[in-house]
Image 1 (cartoon, rainbow, N blue to C red):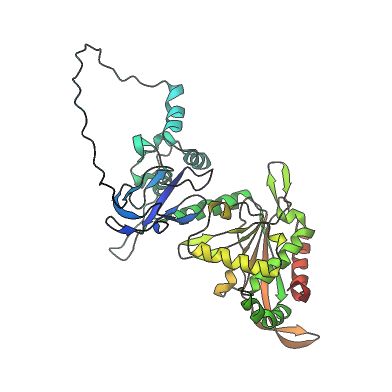
Image 2 (spheres, rainbow, N blue to C red; image 1 turned 45 degrees about the vertical axis):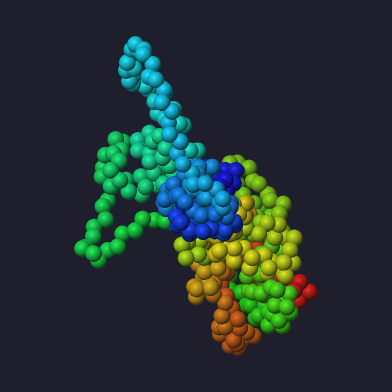
Length: 404
């Protein structure tokens, strides 16, 4: 199990791409994992034959744990050495009698010895006593999957919580009319993060109707030129550019809260939400404020493509200072997005389409869209949020051709 970042202590094997007996090439995808930070396909470190798989799909194991073996060309199959016979010593010893642990040592020591920092953090957030959970890991270690199963199934998991004697709700089924499937690791993480964000931030939303006719005209004029340069000129690149310029003028929207302190970020690290079949991931374009429209177009396409191919690195999915999400690609008029912690604002893009609007006391057809800003009212006031959105709207409706 590879180390996928300094703060990541374990990973869950989602899928084995190869099976025992398969020939594998060096750097060929071997298995797929999910962690707290990123999903990724793990390449083979060598060329050879996959001879053994020690960790099955769904197992959560610590980093540096051996999960499979590969036999390379000319290498003899691994054989277990026979244990040497050692004469048993003739001794007289007093049998060891199990003694109850002191109340001071019992729970805290067991928690540290049989759970990772991640597991203990989840336990603290949900007021769960780790010592009450039966661990499935080595030596009874409580894994991330163990605590998530405990939180998800409660009393149905067969674990008795003496502090919560009331049995949890049970799912009623009607024959085979209901299909029951466990939440995927990614779905569990999304659920945890969304609930945490709702509990943390005072969410407020502001919606602006924006005329994209100017942007559409420029797109049509420059589309072929960008394609020759190997880039696709999309609405998202224009929106990202307008957002970055507005963030320079409204630094608090690009900040975050740390207790009683406000952290003003010097760079714009722009998160772009990407929808996957299994959920949602937000890769981050670092130092996006240093890129022109062509650079943004390339960067957005690159992170989206690698997110769908599960080739993102852990550092590419954290450290964002502002996020853009695009529910409009599926036809939504607008959405009310949840803030991506620890950020204080997120922009939702509605569907961009031609609509009848009033222009100079007449009805005209224009390319329009709703943009929604979700912001944390603990730090961002409504007046500041609306000023920020007004700047974004003005930039898009009167886009400077010299920036293209």
